[in-house]
Image 1 (tube, rainbow, N blue to C red):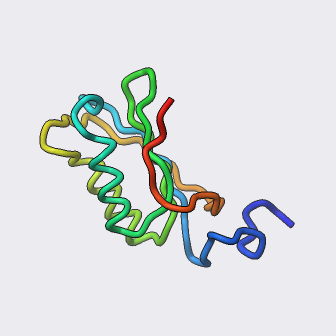
Image 2: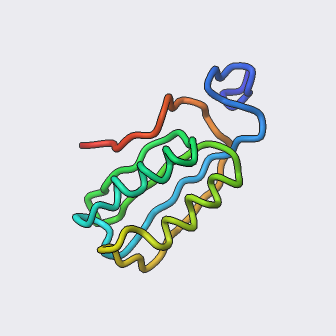
Image 3: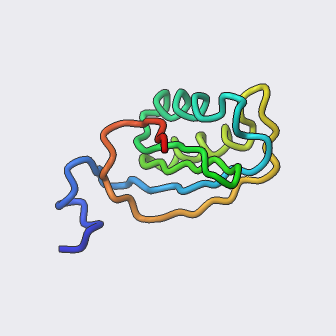
Length: 106
């Protein structure tokens, strides 16, 4: 079976999607990852958020489209000290490999 077949993925529910977003601007050192984790958990999404070496914050989230759209709106705003210049988004089939939502550290 294909890797994205819901029958083979224990954490995947039908109707879920996957959002991969790269957030550009003043988004590191301002609590952005903690903000994203809080929003994602509030929305019952699963995935990760991380700081990348190039100054970008990457978010990978899976869940229902409505909740993902709400998270995407929050990414455009960010926490109080952040200055979001741009959010690049890619929509994919979910993979169902996350148990919750966490901050990924290097």
